Each structure stands twice: as C-alpha cells, then as structure tokens.
Image (cartoon, rainbow over all chains, first blue to last red; front, side, top):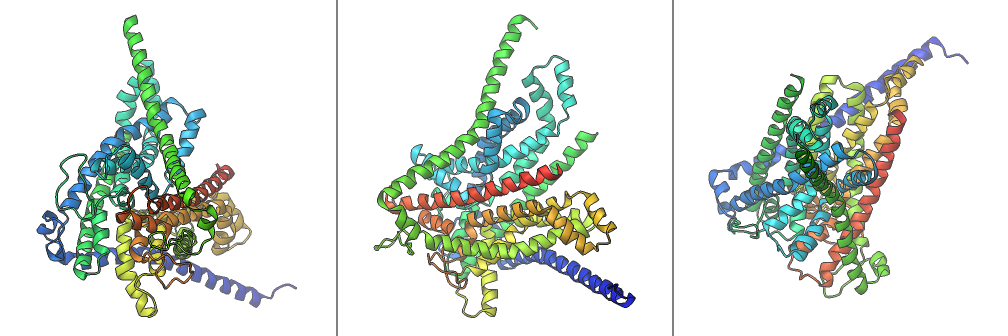
Length: 293
Length: 299
C-alpha cells in the first residue's frame, strides 16, 4: 500500500525528532566527559589549595599533617626522571634509528616491531615485578634510585621508540639522498642530517612519555620504593620516594589533614605535568615552522 | 678520502650498526625478561600450591594463618571493576566519537580531541583520590548502604579514565570510513542518524571493537585507583557496593608490607602477575588483530 501524504509527513517529523534526540544525547555524553575532567581538577584544587605554601615544598614528610611537605618526594621524582632520561633516551632513539634507517619490516625488525607494540600494552605493575627480580634482587641494587629509574626506563622505552620512529619518518627521503650523493656514509647522513631534523619531534614525544612516567606509582611500589623518607637521596643506591607514592601514602591515611596534603601534592604534580606538556606543545610548534621554512 | 680512511669508517659504521641493533633488540629482551621472571617464580609457586587449588578455590588468604590460594576472588574483583568501567566508558566514548566524527565541525573536533586526551594523561593516583574522596561520598548520598570502600566508585572513575581510549580510536576508525559510503547512503535518502548508525558504525566496527578491547585491557591492568578505593578485601562477589580486591591491588598490598623474599606469600604476587599478564596480552593481541583487519579494508 502506498503511504499517504500525511503518513509520509509524520514519518519525516518522527525521524527528525529522533535525529535531534540522538544529537543532543551524543553531545551530552561528550559534555559529561569534559565536565568530569573539570570537576576532578576543581575538587583537587579546592581541597588542596589551603595547604599550598612554600614550606610545603621545602619540608620533609611528618607525622603531623600540617608540618608535612613533599621535599623528598619532589627531589626523588626529579632525580628519577633525569636518570630515566639518561637510560631510556639513547637506547630508545637508537632502536628507532635502527628500525627506520637500517632495516624495514623484514626478519628480525618485524619481530621487534610486534614486540614493541605488545610491550606498550603491558600493565605498568608487571614492569615493577620485572624490576623487582632483575634490578632489586638479581643485580642487588636494592630498593634504590637506580632500581627505580631503570624500571621506569624499561617502562617508557616502547613509547619513546614509537614516537621517535614517527619523528624520523617525517624527515623527507630527499635529504638522505642529497647527503649520500655528496659522499656521506650512512651514519654521517643519520647523524648530520636526519637526527638534527627529527630531534625536536623526538624531544616532544619523549617529554610526553616522561610525563606519563612521572605519574606512575605502581611499578615503584612493586620494586619496594619507600613511602616515608625524611632525607634526600645522596647516591644512586640510596633509597628514595616519589610524588605519586607520597600522594598514595597520604590518601591511604584516615586523617583529613593528610587528605589535604594529598590534594596539595596533586596540585604540584599536575602543575609539573602541565609545564611539561606546554613545553612539548611549544617544541612541536617551533619544529613545524622549521620544516616548512 | 684515502683507502685507510674509508676502511676505518667502514669499521666504524659496522660498530654503530651493531650498537643500534642492540638498542632495538633490548625491547625483545625486556619481553623475554618479563616472561622468564613470571614463569620462574610462578613455577616455584606451583611447587607448593596445586594449579587446581589456584584456579578453583574460592578463598584468597595467603597473608593469614589459614592460607587459601584461590585466585577467583581477585579475578572476580578485577572483572567487576573493569566491567563497571567499560559500562561507563562505552556509551560516553562511542557517542562522543560519533558526535566528533559525524556531527561536530572541524574546529570543535580539533579543540575537543586533545582535551579528551588529557583524561588519559592524568596520573592514576589522582583518579584514586577522586574515587575515594569525591565519587564514593557522592554515591553514598544516593545509595546509603554503599561501603566507604567499594567497586562502584573506582569502577566509574576508571571508566572516565578510559573514555579517551574508546573515543579516540573509534573516532579515528569512523573518520577513516570513505566519504563515498556516506554519500551513497544520503543519495538513497538516508537521514544523518541512519548514515551514522547504519553505515559509518558498521563500517568502522572492527576499529571500534579494537578500541573497546584495548580499553578493557587498560582497566584490568590499572592499579592505583583500585588499590586506593576498593578496600583490599578479596571477596568472591559481584556486589559492587562492598569492599573487594583486584589482582593489581593485591600486588600493591604485598609490596607495601614487609613480606620476606622467597616465602610463599612473596611468590603469590608473581602468580597473580602471570594471570594479569596473560589476560591483558590476549586482549591486546585480539585488539591488534582487529585493527589490522580494519586497515586492510580501507588502506
């Protein structure tokens, strides 16, 4: 039976209603996600801003919440990230160069690629178990700064390799061909032409990888990093603590005073992350200018 | 260049090649290291505990005098929180993805995507704080019987954390659906909604499924939110209102204590870690396989 004119009109308005309802629902869902982010940030800020003062940054943890500070955690995090960078950057960039410039999608490099993709999906706490057996026990570095940063280096390595490869891939082949044409060797081409061009991109990716690592607590807790440290690490083999561990410790206590400390430490941690991300964005923009000029 | 210089530089090139190869192969050794450590310690564990007990006993009490080694309570805790998380993240993530891919203007899309990504970059201890001290008290005003430690609050917060994994990967998949498919559907008289739900979503299905699997895998491996806000009480239940413990939270609990190395309590974390590793690996491989199929379709 052919629908009448009225029936067609009703079907059309009905479907227009559905269109609108769906569109509004979808927009609502998106807003929920964005709103939660805002609520989360505001909540931490409101809870913690009262405790935020200079002495909070320069004091050691204490049994009295109002006297406690994050000095040892902040310094521990900074030391650990510097060491992680020293360990992970050269190896990560080296691996990326190998995969991009030396072999492409064949034999062993195919295995390495699949392996890196899978490593990036391994839960961070599993890296902690590896670090515990390998660095803490087998190499007897104990629960030290060295064990922590080596574990973190293994954790960020896949991310650094993946982002460095992307950066190296953006260097046009014509640059390499010109270099070879002038008689440069493969390594001379990579060192003098490819790396300088890819460097800002590598740096941007690495900063983002490290900002991931700064917030990681699970692997450090697993290798046995301490939660209460009232001194600064003075050697590679000294025990240490880090910002996320300190926050975890304070959240886990029942007293409200420590919860405020945790919120204040969260603000500090988020500010550090914000600065690192801003640096990454800044570098990316400079980099883009350079390539197209 | 003299002959000697060329020869010297060839040797140098060879050394550099070898060093770079070692850098690349290190990641393979990392995987081998993880597998070796887990297999070795889990093997030690199963010398003292039967696999049958591990997989079927309904109690997990390795830290008590009366020891039971049934991993089921930890597995149920993990799946309960992950299930709540994906229940939360799936509608929000998918509808956001559809909105961004099919409805939003280029400018909104460009502005909103990075903001969504921030959700994935926030440290998980921060989410743990949020789950314990904001979401759970808020839920308690709605559900008075809700315990201060529970699976619901952390599950919801974990869901928020994995939204960008769902939305971003699915959006990429939907955005990659060729414009000609949409135009064909419009030419046949479809509305925008019909195009989105009956053409774009099915065409991007394997990418969407891959993103969901990856998000579940991330939720299962997530540690700090559940360690802070779930209560560390292994309990074989699907009740989201009572304290539970996940596999990851158990590893944290043992690591925080003074469990001497070499004891059976110490070995349990590797057996639990093995379980966790196997489950997440399977999910990740499935997700990769789906994504590769998807790439073949429109590559």
